[in-house]
Image (tube, rainbow, N blue to C red; front, top):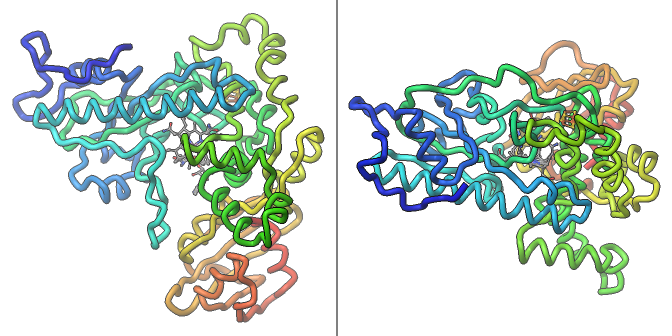
Length: 437
Ligand code: B12
Ligand code: SF4
């Protein structure tokens, strides 16, 4: 689709607004398509399906009333290529295209007197926020699903019914109502073929739907966020250039330079690459599934590449067994909680269910001082639940200064004074092993 950035409101342009100021969905869809969107859907900010997004959206856009979900296709064969530069080129160019398309739509709406704004499709995010809130303003996946653009598949990305997993997403926030809103797609395009499970080099996607965000982040985001922090600390810790080269090889240094200069490169997007769902993409898999496996899955599995894992993580166990030909790089995940709220929020996505096998315990955390907060963490049957307040009878009760605790889990261990009661230190050590970072 060719984008028309100027979009003059000519006599041929259908009216966009009803007299009462409501936007006409059909005309808005046409405008978005002319701005370059491959598909769009609409949802009200007050829709319960996006309830978890409302506060964050309104912090950025206080007048928000409606959301436009935007989807942009990626080049399928680029994403499938085992050569990361080829796949990353698709992620970068399509990512910029999402932001550009959203910008064109926002400008076109502004020209028609409608206030609108577009949070970024990925970065920049609110990463410097001292309150440690969720860094993304809006979860594009949640909005896209509610707007009817597709459904979240087993691999946790949105699958568009036509374009499949080969789409990136954006959201535009508008201060007017829209007359016809989207409905969740009635069927799930995910085929449950589990190729994404077989393709992930660090075992982040499990066949039962469990997603290990920490495993994905540590490997895939080696040149981003926490991976970058870990790299900086390796430089700081190295005595001299030879010590640095023992810790980071030349290829990794060059890769980091490339990411800093040209945009951060993902290490893998295998879960999207192998996904055969979506009517435009299904072809080969539908006719000859074995050929699809040979041509798309196998090259990714065979590829010689370093895998980044946190020592003591489920990913380390998985990758060493499943991919012995891929060298393991044991690294820190690199992100540290900056508040007790952030620490508690991060526990579920850091949780390593494999490491929790056989553990059944209730922990009371009683943090004191400037970061005072009480919480209960329940670990049982390889699941974790974090509750506010001190709930039930604990196996372990931990009292600590909140700030000292944050330094402790941030690997500055010397500074902690804590009081542990109940079944005490043994269970606390088991707790620690469930959250390697
Ligand atoms: C955070 C994030 C990540 C994190 C967490 C992924 C996740 N599943 O949430 C990591 C770093 C792992 C990641 C990886 C990737 N991402 Co990403 N990511 C995002 C981001 C910023 C928010 C995701 C989100 O809404 N999560 C909330 C809910 C809906 O997700 P969930 O799966 O139900 O729940 C998990 C997370 O919430 C996680 N979690 C909770 N709190 C926190 C806090 C932090 C810091 C982290 C890391 C995770 C986390 O734990 C939950 C359970 O596992 C969006 C951009 C945006 N602003 O929306 C892109 C986005 C989801 N990513 C995208 C892509 C393409 C990828 C990758 C393919 C990148 C790549 N090229 O390799 C991989 C795929 C990994 C996967 N299988 O999901 C696309 C997906 C497009 C689509 N078709 O759906 C998005 C929408 C970007 C875009 N604008 O298009 N991503
Ligand atoms: S690869 Fe298969 S199981 Fe995974 S998301 Fe796609 S269709 Fe679903």
